[in-house]
Image (cartoon, rainbow, N blue to C red; front, top):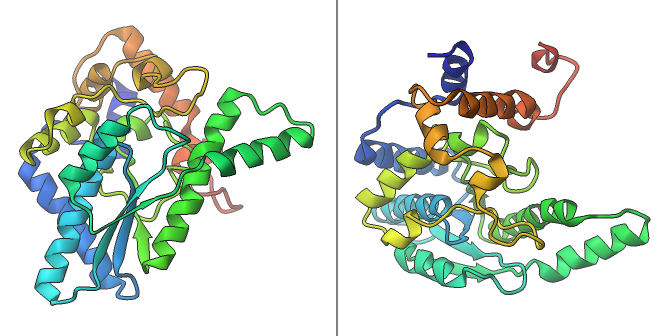
Length: 276
């Protein structure tokens, strides 16, 4: 195993092999225990896109809430699914299928197009260019504003979908989809999340769907693997301690080293990690 590979695996706590049921139970217990330890919160809120990650996190959160309701005889525990299209979502059918699978207690839709376009116009009026990539980074931030507003209305905690196969590359918007309260998938790679969805009998189309952040208007539904420059197969193999082609390993390691700040809270005068 490569030296940096071992460091990355240890940093992200990826296991080479998982028992899907064990990891499902582990995540559900984690979600339940967090609410029990913080009784001022009564719900989980999560944006459902129709992709693998939010489908899995949503099912885990809904199950945790159902179990808490039954065990505590408290009907105030709720799971809130949030739909957040930018205008008309191209893969809306997938999002609906995910909701059918998750069966959330409450579903709220907060379309982010008007807010995103208004801010883009304001920034351009101030003299900024705001190209397609910049507007793409505004979208997840707008989504998080809405998610926290929805969560507050329901005494809730915002659930994230960050996992090792994205975290290694900082493949998230730090104060957008990365700005959450609790991440039940953190430690898993893409392959392991798929194994868990299969165990949960999710529709095959949801876990076999081509992953896409879908943030760029000029390149709609751009596959994550194209954006990253390396396949999830090689990413998962690398994170599980397997040997991968040299070019893939170099790409993964370059992404990891160049995005270190995205995996940390804001730097203070007492932090040293940033110049090591």
